[in-house]
Image (cartoon, rainbow, N blue to C red):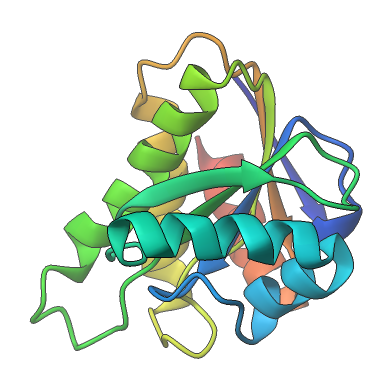
Length: 170
């Protein structure tokens, strides 16, 4: 699997699937989640409402998949990252699960190219360095075969520099 890094806007990526850092309600929010819902349009929200009505939302570390509305992608994989609680609430395993479960859904839906944001590093306050290490390690160690390329899309310079340093070391 090829791993790429860019600084930019995840909603503008032309890939098979975009990963959304969602919240448990699946009804949109701030940051990446808000941007994906805003630009993707009501089709994404409508499908999220159906999922929510069927299963009650999405648990931390889990993932669900929807259409992509007006985005330049086939699907949106919504995953709920953990809120940082100083490592006292199994946050590391939950963040790993976000990546594992997103990759599994991508594989099941034949998505070959994915764009991931920096999950949990915004309002959920997960330490950026640790989050990047988990993201890269989990993607590299996955046994996924259909996904051919993962792009880490960093919105800010700080996350971009962290990812760049880790990727250049390996």
